[in-house]
Structure formats: C-alpha cells, structure tokens
Image (cartoon, rainbow, N blue to C red):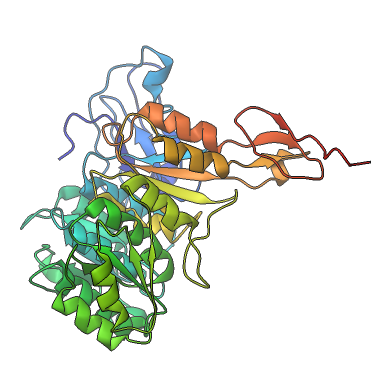
Length: 435
C-alpha cells in the first residue's frame, strides 16, 4: 500500500498528547502542524514504537528511514512551509484518510462525522459527485476502497472516525457507492447506478432527501475528468449537487434529475469542447436558467471557476485572504477525497495543475493576483494558505516552494490608488495630482 514511502499521516490530537517516539540518532520526532486544519504529519525512524493507548486513532506506520544527513532530510519543505501544507500520499486512499482525520480529528472528546461515504479507487466520477454529501448538514467525508478490499489505512480511519449516524443522515453511518466495499457491521446505504450519470443522480436525490432541494446544480463532464475536478470543492462548500453530461449528449438520468429541479439554476462547468453548446441548449429547455463557466484548458477552467460569482453561486476568489487546494489533473479522484478541505478550515476552491514539476503560468499569475500584503503590522494582516494534495510525484517540492512564495505576506505601502503586490516589497506611488 505505502511500502517504500518515508512519510505517513497521523492523527495529531492523539499522538501529540499520548505518544513518544524513540528515534535512532538525533531525530526524536517531527510534527508538522497543518496551518489550516487539525491534521499533521509524523516522520519516524527505524526502531520507534508508539506507546499503547485506548483512544481511537489510525494505525501509525513506522517505516525504516536513515538518520538525517542533511537539513532537507528532516522533512521540510516537503510536508509544510510557512504558507502551505501537503497531504502526502501516493494514492487516493491514503489522501482520503489523511483529509478525513484532519477535518475530523476525533480525539480528545471530539466526535467524528455522523457518516462517511465510501467510493472505489477506480471511480473518480463517484468520488467527485459524492462531494455534495461532504457539505452540512450531512458532513460525510470520503474514504476509498479497492475493489472488494478495504485498505488498511481506510479501515483504521473508519475505526478512528467512528461514524454513529444522526437525524441529519437519517440514521445512516455510511453511504457506499457501488462497487465500494464496506465492513458488514457498518451496514452502509448503497448508492448504485449503471454509469456515472445514474450514480450522480442518485446522490442528488439522496442529498435532497437529507438536506432539502438544492439552491444550484453543477453540470460537469463525465468524459474529461480534469474539467470536472473543481466541482468537488464547490459541492463540498455549498451542498450543490453535481450531475454529469457527455460531450455531445445529456444522459437520461441527468435529464430526469434536471426535470425534478426545473426551477433550480444550472451552471455548466467547462468549455464547448467538453460540453457542447447543443447540450447546454438542451439543458436550457428543461430548466429555467443555465450558464456556462470555465476556461479552455483544465488549469484555466479551475481558475475561472474560482473567480466566478453569480449571486449566491461561486467562490468569487479575487482578493487575498483565502485558502486554496491544489491537485494534479492526472489524479481526478484526489479532488473528491480532498473536498472536505474546501468545507472546513480556510474554505477554498480546488485548483488544478497539469504539471507536477512547476506551476503553470496561468496558475502562477492567479496566485500572484491573490498575494496578501500589509502596511504596518503583519499580525493584523489577512493570509493565504494552500493545501497541496498528493506526494512529490503528484506535486513536486519545487512547485510547493513556488506556491509558498506566492502565498507569502509581503510589506507594502499605499498611496491613493491601488497597485499590484509582487513577491518583493512593493511601494505604490501616489497619483500625480495628490497633494
């Protein structure tokens, strides 16, 4: 599952208060606190054993690691920098467990979520559509299964989260999107469908049963996952359901779901090359209002969605002081499992990169637009914070350093006008007619 990987997620609340680690050499323990959440990371070396405890927590895996020989060996900046936190993991199951435990620490007398949603590792559309169940009042984080198997880390996270059901979940402790596996004693509510559109329509109907009619609907592509990914963060933030369309056709299940919600405005995510104008016209014949939002490539599509606002719909992230989540477009399920980070902590949109090694130019420019500054006292300023989803194969350490610099607070002085904030200290000149 994670053999050969040196870094593993652990539940901060439990291990900070109850565990001690004995490490070979000078490294005793490394705890990197998540700047915008309750989760964190532990790096342990060969020979360490956690102290026994009766409190629920995920299993902490100790992997052999040599004594650090250089400063970078202690973990920075691969886990966290001043303005970023990485949820490391080579696969979606690992990331899902880490995100769920970061958002729901479930220790120290703090209760876990009322329910969880289980999705198969091969089912990226199900994971993205399930993001609407993350939003209040359901509040069900997503965990990942692997065919008929329940990964050890998923099982351990389930034990720690201990979902107990509530009126908000109609007493359900888990929702399982077929063919996701689940422990028999969990007795999950099965969500089934022959294709992504049917599954998404079932999730929309379940969400409506639990939380009432939606305020908006997002229509995303089931053909192009990179364009659908940003919908997950918004669904978790708002509870707006996600339905699926194909490039040149509107599936029957989607059409029926739209008819059930004919007075609900629909927002189509992606350009005409992803969901055609003909499909949008067909949607417009069913519902009262339909609008398209998005860009021509996956990176710009996510940025445009993050910038967009129409009444109560949309992030409207066009100024500093926000959280953001960054994922690799080649790993679409990461968007679904990371969705709880958009509904807690620093509440931010999901942005997509098509380059694991360095930030694409449009994404770099967007983050520069959001760069925060202060005039007199940095402790009174507003801040940006970025979550990076995946290991260094998904998002490199160099990319993380770029994000950190672009998110960093910088000193500025202001005149009568405004001005751009750059990574260097910037003085804004007053207007020529200023006294």
